[in-house]
Length: 158
Image (cartoon, rainbow, N blue to C red; front, side):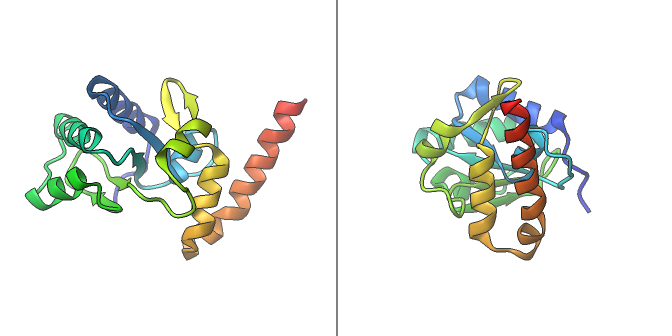
């Protein structure tokens, strides 16, 4: 089993992406955790922009971080395959170029939030993506994510 996601992993990715100009958003439960959601996850979900230049910069950033990409993985990232799981690095990363329930990177980027300099999908987009994926583990997490969103909303209106 993989180690549990932690802030350091997101920070390392964000720093490497920033240095190489990678356009990205943190997504999934890891993104929600960066927004303050009290839970754990095993990997970091990243929603990168699917452009040739961005994908090349993404490959470079991942290699710099110590990910040993096979030629097949490198080709999948370079072409922006919808979903790429990377397990050959310092931590586990899922690249989600076409997340369920999110119409485009540009739309999600307009709604994104910045947490300590890291770009994170809006919680509504994270929830929408989990709803659309309809996986058992996502259906189990959704009530807690919605309750967290409601708590944030009440807190910000006080």
